[in-house]
Length: 183
Figure 1 (cartoon, helix red, strand yellow):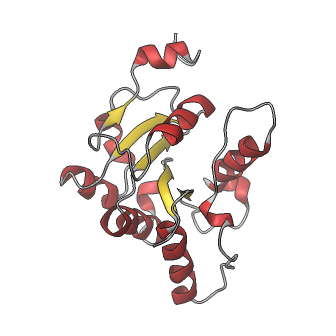
Figure 2 (cartoon, rainbow, N blue to C red):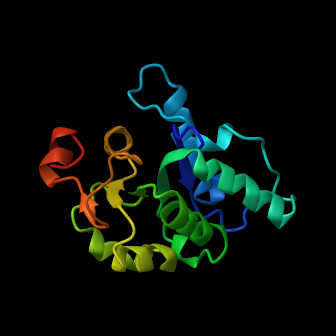
């Protein structure tokens, strides 16, 4: 049995190699928050716990690396941007494997929103793999804005041994106000 202390990060790269032109920029930002001393944000990056795999690697090699990373993870951050639902390849695989095989909760983080208090209204952004698992109640998901405080709180609270109570869980507007995010 793997030691599950990592956080797996999934995002749609749009097949673009330049990080600033896809949701990869949010993954890069997460890593930057993690290394800043004055920041109350930290996580164990599951992608850094195994050998690096290049985009040119064979599909089977890449899939095996992703499975290993997911098995070593206690939760997943799914960055949900405007194009995430268009990914028909790796993001759906990562969601399905995380939920169906690893039983880890998903922290759905939305960069375009200041706060999330009605996650069902964001359904149009979800990949089918997430919709299906929320609908059949197999996914445990907390929906948050892509900001340090909500992400840090979700990471500290929700993991394989303490899951959200359903697929449409969110922090209250008052909580976002307490963080100084909402008015």
